[in-house]
Structures are given as C-alpha cells and as structure tokens.
Amino acid sequence: MSLFSIFMIALGLAMDAFTVSISNGAVLKKVRLKDALLIGAYFGVFQGLMPLIGWAVGKEFQQLIMRYDHWIAFILLSFIGAKMIWDSVHENPCACKETVQPTDALSSKTLLLLAIATSIDALVVGVSFAFLKVAILEAAIIIGLVTGILCVLGVYIGRTFGKLLCGKAEIVGGIVLILIGTKILLEHLGLL
Image (cartoon, rainbow, N blue to C red):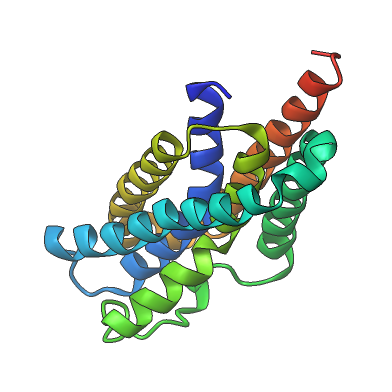
C-alpha cells in the first residue's frame, strides 16, 4: 500500500478524534497550547496503537482468509466509513449541544475514554493491514501523527468555529475510508 493511501486512511480515521477535539475546544473557556497538545497526544497515541493491536490479531488468522483479504479490507473500510457518515447524519457527533462539561474536557478519565472510543476503527483497520501486508510500524506512526496534529488543530478550530463545523468532518472521513476500500478491492480484482 502506498504512503499516500496510508495517509488518506490516517485522515479518514482521524476524523472521529478531530471532531471530538473540536468539541473539546468549543467547550473550553480558554485554550492553552499545553491543553491542545494533551488532547492531541491522547488521541494520537491511541490511534497509533490500535492498528498495531489489530495487525497482531489479523496476522494470527492470515493464512485462513488470505484469498479474501481484499474483500475483507473493502468491507471493513466501507463499513467504518458508512458508520461514520451514518453517525454524523443521525446522531450528535460533537458538542453542538455542549455535552461535555468544560471541567471534564481535560480530565484524564474523559480523554482516555474518548481516545479509546474514537480509535476502535483504527483497530479494525489494523486487522485489514495484516491481510494487505502493510508495513505496520510506518502506518501506525503516520496514523498517530496525523491524528495528533489534527486534534491539536481541532481544539483551536473548535474554540473558534465549533458550532459551524459540527458533524461535517466525520462525513468527509467516512467518504475517504469508503473510497480507499473500493480502491483496494478494484486493485486486487485487476480493475484498477
């Protein structure tokens, strides 16, 4: 898989965490660099670790389903992308209604739970990476860094424009994941 594809997957995966970071920025009374970096670190580390865990699990079952790896990647990425779009359209994915209290936005417990919840998709992508023989350390670092950087930016964006951007980042991320899954399938079928 090319670096560009990994980067695009990283962008798609980062959208949940980016959206939550916008939410955090929107509810904080004052955004300090150390707070934005803390949020970026939590999300970036978990987004980077989860593909490693998924990859390890996927490696265990690789021989059993190697003939279907491209279909698995397509289905998983498409499912995750469609779920992101569905959630964005049918639920309240960010704090437009300020569901996070300002005092809780930076607590270790809150950040840990949010980081785990937003990185489950990265775990599933890690499983598909095992079947696609992706260089997992490189991919995990890229995913973690992209997520961390976007989350730092998201905090500042949330402070300034949080209410305007609510929900749109997840739609874009979902579309990107579906397109990457389709590209993988078409390449393995020899149609691209």
